[in-house]
Amino acid sequence: MKALRAFFQNRFSPLTVRRWASFFRQKRALFGLAGFLFVFFFSMTAELWSNSKPLLLKRDGVWYVPAVRNYTAATFGITDSFVVDYRELVKAEGESGKVTFALFPLNPWDPFEQTSDVMTGPSKQHWLGTDSLGRDVAARLIYGLRVSLSYGVLFWLACFFIGIIVGCVQGYFAGTLDFFTERVKELIEILPFLSVVILINGLMKSDSFWVTLMVVVLLSWVGIASQLRAQVLSIRNREFCEAARAAGARNGRIIFTHVLPNALTPILTLTPFSISGGITTLAVLDYLGFGLAPPTPSLGELLSQGRAYIQNAPWLLIAPTVSLSWLLISINLVGEALRQAFDPRK
Image (cartoon, rainbow, N blue to C red; front, top):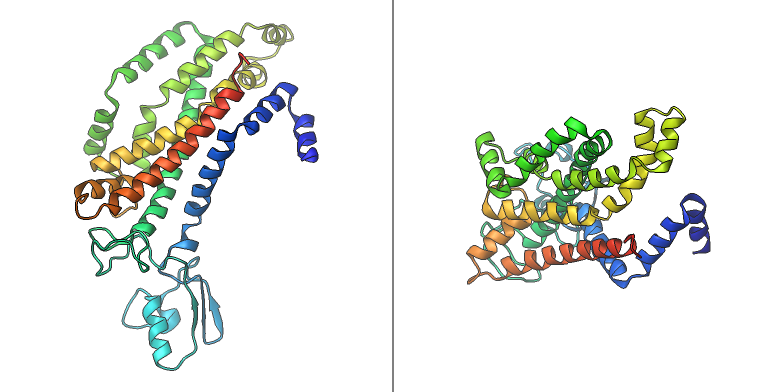
């Protein structure tokens, strides 16, 4: 712990070190980080926990890793199919007397596999039951969480990238450019967000991950740009910026060396809220049927099924609701702790 403290003290200002120390002293920060990292780890390594392919397969003295690497049917001498059914392969070779070792994940189902167990409740075979197509809910949930987290993080990165560029240019150069950019931002802000996203998705006739992300980002960067603009306006005429100009520094050097490092700290506290906003937006779009294309695993799609079958299959609604609530609460706890720690009034 002392070595870690010394590392930060040698590389960051005393104020930054105090702020991060204040952040980690908060119980809600630790609880939120633990909850978020728990979901992040298991969703990003979903293939290791839920998959119809074995993690390890030993056949004829040769080791295979089907969960990580794709093998053709010809690799195993299968001539009547292009797809390898590893369960049937292990079963058939066991019946023929061959010694084949297979280590399957804890939940031996993938999110796209349809079974004959349609709308069955939680059991030893299907931990969280199955949906209306016989797909394992636990598998779709863990893969859906990965899709949601990936979307939320990419949404945050894209919004911050556009918002930082626009806000920095606006605040530093001001004048006519700032005036016209503000009018564009006002126009975007008055648009009904959800209606416009659904309309654009419908006109483009696309429900891919990247198209949906692009459309949502184009309507969501305004808040970050406005926050950064306000920060840059208050910093650009400070003494250290004037001294840099007097020393002959160019605008680009002043922006990246003096303005941005001082303007970004308050903006970074918005990161958790931006990620949770992206996750929520995707869930809403999928719930309404205007998000990702089926059969992509999705929390919103599970919520939609849960609403439709709430009388007969309540597990379809309970599982994604608890998971989404857990994820959003964890992220927002981190955000509140960051805001508390980086509050300039403290």
